[in-house]
Image (cartoon, rainbow, N blue to C red; front, side, top):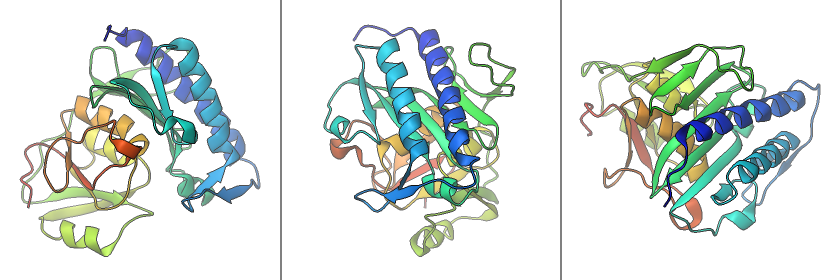
Length: 266
């Protein structure tokens, strides 16, 4: 594969995430909006569709030779490529519908099964995380102008306290199996977050450990995985403890564990 310009990827992903975030907030701030169910019973809103159209058009214009997989375009789900963009235009639609604010825009570049660049933007919370051209994970402070990045803080996972971990878990998908697994570890505090923000809390040193014993798709995790990886973390297959890979048939993930590498697995 020919090399992509990492600076161009950073610039385009960041800009498209901001533009999609504005389109999403236009719907979110209305007094009412329509919600319908997809075939898998997950909710879909016009905000999902507007953000998907915007991001897809921008990626195809900026990188016409790179394959594209998005949650909202079923015809892309059978693609096979060594390099592809993977998009969840609105991760956390349940949070969006319930107006809890924890929804995100997620765009990632995958090469040879590894998410190498990504952006996670939570427009209702005013938080944006991404990998920069130097391979660092950063959180950008506002005002989030499309073509002029604000001040960025380089992120590194904190060294975990083996006697008291801070664990982050899902708001909408917490279950007994997850609680039972977390109980194997010494936990000082629990944090709850929706969507891919959980990966970013680890990257920002606000949590240490995120186990997911539930169904996810690659577009749910790739951008957050890229940010966490650049901050020194890792995402492992729950059963094999091998690094989580991308481009799998159907783009479905196994259960996984996101963690600081110093945390011993039980």
